[in-house]
Image 1 (cartoon, rainbow, N blue to C red):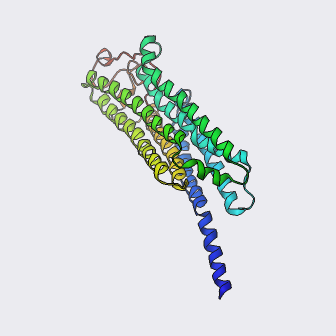
Image 2 (image 1 turned 90 degrees about the horizontal axis):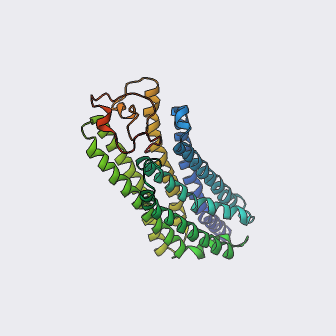
Image 3 (image 1 turned 180 degrees about the vertical axis):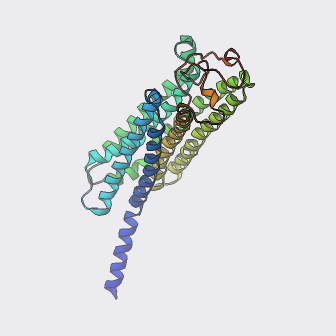
Length: 327
């Protein structure tokens, strides 16, 4: 009877030990499958012109980074389940941490490129550009320094035999991580607020063109969603780091937050690519005319006019001729 009890206790202990790592693998697999599917759709809907744009290449880079994070997550946690007495090398474990904490800087930069569409470099005075981009640039530099300090502190604590213990000891109320998430909130809030404020000004100028106004509202909702969901996760991460001594739930939130951020940016680009794909094949699409004017701030290259009956001069914005896209 005692042997049966001992066996059950051993099995229960093993299940409890692998439960967190199993959660990481399940979350990474599910999110990666969704992300890869959307990326395939994006490739299918993209045109030769859109694939040359900076926003498309940044999206591809972001997807590669998050997929690499998934591979490292599966490798580290799968090794912990299959061979718990022979953990992965310290370098592999630290690589996973690097791919988990540094790529959000790139994801936030992708959202920041929308400001370039509204403030084109060729038409905007240098003083205005400095006022607009100085704060996010300083925030991102500070975030790099903070994350580097966190990584250095983690490297000094971690050893090949104590990776999990090091993660646990550096998680609770870690000043570097909490500072990073707080600055990420401020960074995104600044970029989105400035973008939506400028977009609201465009809406007043071109409110007579119904198709354009409809697309501006859609971009508004997409931008708000791209800010709200990461904001919720960042607040949850700060609360978790302040109240929970175990890093299990916090690490899972951080992992999912990276996927949600990339999915939001990718869905925005996918929405635009779908409209462009339909336009290139002369398919009827509701309100597609917003992308057909060379003077529109959406940055279309084809020389055509709006179907709303409004002359191009009436809807031209200061960003005339800009080649970037907002989403």
